Length: 546
Image 1 (cartoon, rainbow, N blue to C red):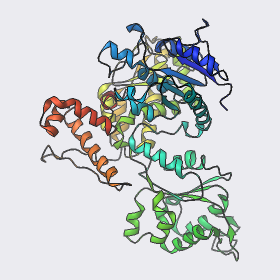
Image 2 (image 1 turned 30 degrees about the vertical axis):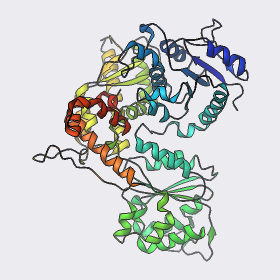
Image 3 (image 1 turned 120 degrees about the vertical axis):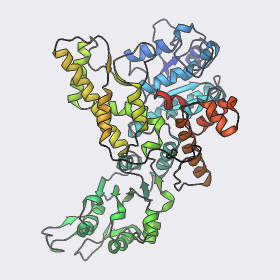
Image 4 (image 1 turned 180 degrees about the vertical axis):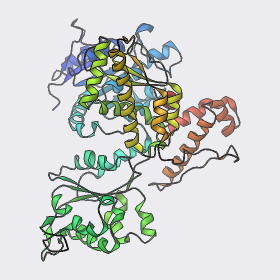
């Protein structure tokens, strides 16, 4: 599978190109500049070439250190000196590649310790299709290239999933990939809009290898007295109104995956029969005399912990155990993932532009600016873009971006997708109307109306904001939510993370003030910043979403 791979090397030196051509002859090392150097010398050259040739490379090989002129360096906020900018330039290039071509496999040619020096190790480890290795190990490089190609081919099923960088989502991803195979049921818990059905289909079913259909039964939409017929099927005359035989969802999903949403709505008197189906792998339709064998992987979802329903007597303990609490996965609400908001918003821009009507608006604006059709569209959140901006930039003012960060997102990902779609639609419509009125657009930076964002968020259902001090309370006290985790250490980390996030917001990101509060020493702000990174709270994301 690795044979014939087209490799693009981004490196300011010659040694790697020579070694790869000599020892990895089964691959094609691209000569992007046509100068027999077989490499691109820096980040700007790489971004320009890939923008013009987005499908030309199968795998990118990226060096870490770049001894190039300062004007050829991409911005790297963590590097406070020119020397460190050069030493860790690969991190800046990797971020740019991930933002623009998230599915492109990248092999980073460096030691892990180099990344840890700028707290960027999780930037690499948290992104699939990225590998880190010592820069002189070409035998390992061969293996890494092959692995990257295999994962890239499989990655279509996961490429569109909105993972983000949040540690809780990293754990969700790890556990779901592990539980996709086999017949074992999976329990997905999480608030409305956190993506339970999406993950059930796009990951659990897609990675299961099962040839049957993915069948959905949303019990919140089914009248209670009809739930047995929907689950198990019914024969003609089995009940009033049953004028024909109907298959239940277990038969429809035979050989595939059955997603039962809001499973806590199954009546107690029906739960026994559901337990027997899961146990015996046979279903008896209502009014039938024979059982029908079924081979189904069940994914059961609930917007509240099933364990609570068990304790309240609304859900049978034996059914809960048959569904296997060991497979329980909790999807975190969006309000606990503020550092993912920028990434998720940009992904929803791409989803919105899949609509032909919005794509037509985008193309009309792009042509008005002389950019041609199919120009990329980016949300620029709360700050000016770095360097030369490409495509269309939808500029979200800093106050509006802070409003988005503070919003509790009761509808979670579903609500964010709606808000982003409206931002894209109204901003592009305003630009088209300006063009139609004969007012030429002077820049590719289209200002998003801050009032529009206020209107979109104003009607949202109110849920508690992230933990913060209540009025009149001790300012050093914060509320935290304690939710069941797999280990006590995970519970402790979740509580500490909530506290650090609330304190960071209370002091407006002043690390000195946080250090004084927690350590009694204002000069230890760096220790606070490092701890934030360890907790998965990326400072640059909290500040501006960049």
